[in-house]
Length: 256
Ligand code: NAP
Image 1 (cartoon, rainbow, N blue to C red):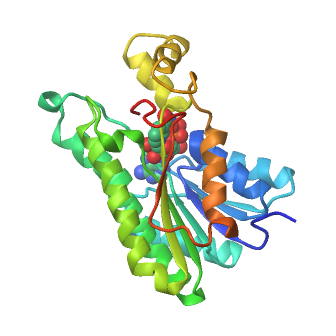
Image 2: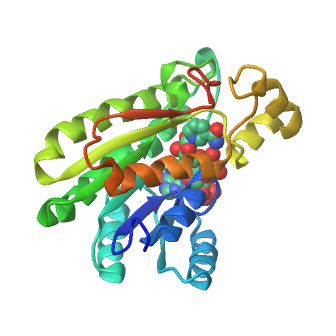
């Protein structure tokens, strides 16, 4: 018996990194999982892997910043997997730059994917959740919500996700829906590896440097974010709503 048997989850940005780890964990815990991403072949490959392991999964191509694509994603989840119980807003991009060099496009794209995307997905998902009087909305924020050099766009989006989460909790609680956020610190994914490359250092050197500022003395793994998401998605977290859980290896972590 898995903790999520009979549940259907929809994970955005599921083709790789933290999203793929969340999808693997929710599937291992018994949920059927819709995998949504810009990268449809990546989702199809992961769906095949989950099915091989005995799970039920569906791959959906979707740009979370596009309202009609998001509605199609929710409709396809319900058509393919029967219902929607758990939404994980994970899709993300970075376009880092110091404020004086940050372009309108850097700002709009990052806010568009993270904040508008989380809003569009939550708005589309709440309807079937309200109808069934049950839901879990879990959004991926970041320690950068507290402010981070070179990330005015990303920091604002991740702080916005925290405000959105609290407001969803307030508005949707009476329908049996909880809304929570996880705020990871430095996690080993393509996103942080690309940042290392941009800074002209190896991912290993970048991780070693960052680890000096992390209480646990190491960077995190995607599975360590996924396990907290799985807790928030489960009935163990039935009375937890409107919260932000930092998953950063310490009270401060490092800003990512
Ligand atoms: P990642 O490896 O870059 O994966 C992000 C995924 O999101 C990619 O598959 C990407 O697809 C997809 N995506 C991007 N834009 C999208 C859109 N408009 N619609 C649908 N999918 C889209 O990043 P990650 O490190 O796993 O990050 C996952 C989440 O955790 C993000 O919200 C990120 O901000 C957050 N986070 C990460 C860290 C960290 O240290 N890694 C720390 C704190 C928070 P493509 O490959 O096709 O672009």
